[in-house]
Image 1: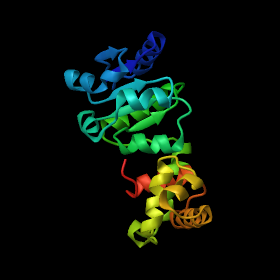
Image 2: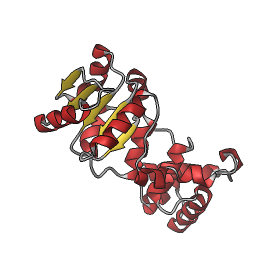
Image 3: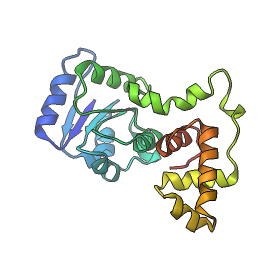
Length: 210
């Protein structure tokens, strides 16, 4: 396993937490969060634990592309105040766990071991939102759910881009009222109560390509 964190204090803390278990071994520690792919390839580790200060610091420097996901067997990210849609994005691009930076030793050990085994870990809060799609289709397959229309799918993609109803209306050449109607319809079909939840469910069901 490798650890990456810009803060020396945080690196030391993670080493202390992760070396306390006989089943875990830290082989490399780096301050360069941008070099996660290089670290994984050079040291042939099963898991990379990366800590960043905020979601904004992570997405651009780490660039979790599908190609990177293939080169990192298990990526455990530590970041505070991550928006639901952002978490869904990161999971879709290869992360195995997204945890707060003050995670307990037991929680971190469990996430690292799961990542090493190729299993994704969700916190209770993440499951409440990202798992909504699973619960909505429990007892039947996702394919039996009412599909989105072409326009609804188009608008869902724009919601993922952060566009407001007026912006969507201007782009599509339709009224804001019509956009609102489509948004309410796709919410009902996805079982979502908010834009963020709709985007998260769209990612989980493969309706949004990131």
